[in-house]
Length: 348
Image (cartoon, helix red, strand yellow):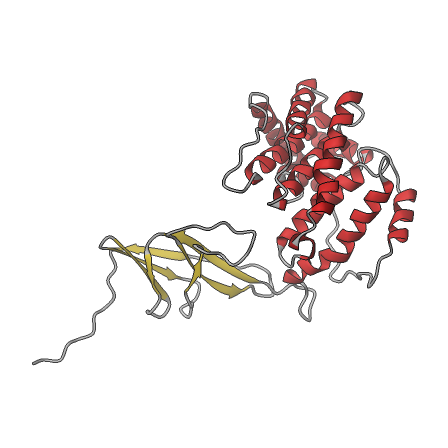
């Protein structure tokens, strides 16, 4: 989450000249629903309102004529949208217990096609985006047992509904808004599980999807929008603690490099990890630090509810603190057929 497709985000930011985030942002210690309700009541109800205003979209179009960089990004969005015209609409096909790949495909398609339409006015993009949203809206549910799926699908339809509101027919608006309301927002109240207070990126993704849906429908459902908005304001700081400033304006973050393998790992050799399988050996060596401590992580029985089990597999990797610059490069050397030196045996 990535809020919506990366290219669309880049395009809006290039045109809007997004300012850098301040090093410190004050967060309210308490938030009343009544205060949020009043803010929603006073909010500008003009559409589009998610991520960009009509004026900002017009500015993007101007920048496409003035900037080769912005034009190149738009060209790629249009290229992707043209490919999507030939795709079948999304289907309710789970992978294990997840529908996430379907939600993410819908999010990419809706945001790309909607952006392409707003930039070009080509009705082919509008028609195809409408079909994608109606297909998702017709699903029996958006798989609330794995709530990330609900969040990303809600975000997808919220973007399409908001960005194309004036061009969609009344029946389509009613169907899409109903799906956002019932399969997204109301479902989030019924399935308000651990994700609500999550301390990892699940919190950011789930609350972002619900918040987008709430703001998309705040005209019709202001009380529900206030409740969901307040929930996000109160709980999102927990997720942000992972990259919170630590005595400076630069976040201190621990970065993990890892890979999953069916081979048997050997971490006994300093700075080096050996993988053995069927009589073959592969040596892994981190070149960024000779003191790298290799670790193994259980993925057969993962400890977190958002992970799926990978039977017969193990994750190997290491952790490293990012420097104050925020940049960290990893180089891993793979050497096949490596055998560690054997200890010398005493002469008989």
